[in-house]
Amino acid sequence: MSLSVFLCHASGDKAAVRELYEALQRDGYDPWLDEENILPGQDWNYEITRAVRDSDVVLVCLSEHSIGKTGYVQKEIKFALDVADEQPEGSIFIIPVKLEECEVPDRLSHWHWVNLEDTNGYRRLVAALNRRADDLGIETDDASSEDENIQGSLYDEEDTIEAGTNVTYPCELEEGNKINIDLRSDESVDVLIMEESNYEQSNDEGEVCREYLDRDQLHAFFTAPDSDTYIVIVRNNSDDNDAEIELKISYAD
Image (tube, rainbow, N blue to C red):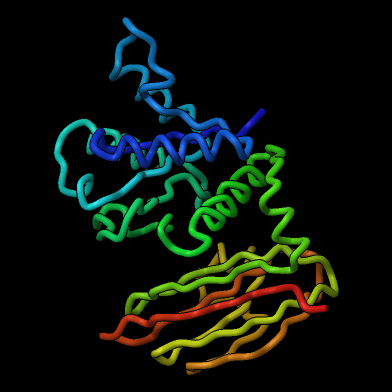
């Protein structure tokens, strides 16, 4: 059994979405793409509606072209949002996926997006898919993640954090595992480390394992007190300025 992934997209983005479809297939997922999964003579509307409801994850593929396009892609998004409302709180079901730099529509802004043009953007998407698979009890066989663990690298990111928002980086750690955190930012940000259960219950206002406040640079390490998934949160408290960050999280020797 593989994680089923619905690819919601505009027809003008078909080439880029096709590449994503093939990458997901190679990495052991079960992606759903209309031109592959709808047979001649089948009811287009019925098959897509059923596929969204039967999927474990919906990737809403965004581009400058798709966000301004009217038509069926907007119906797909609306139905996916309806299905998302039926999911348990904290579930990863809808993931906005930027195929290029573009604005995320307001109705999708509740979910943190990933940009496939960013360094390690696809790997971050895979991490989210694997988290969803774990939640559903679906085993994954992601060789790329294993390679990252062998090399000791968890995240090597360049990211933009909008004013008044945060980004999160999940780290699955065994008791006693240490991670290094290296951060550079052009704005002062806060770095918090929380257990996943505390984060899901109360976002970034719950019990914090470690916090580093008002930093534009940080070089620190964290030792996991228990085997758990820990969330590294980088928070931009500014009311006006976006923060451009460079972040590396890796296993410590």
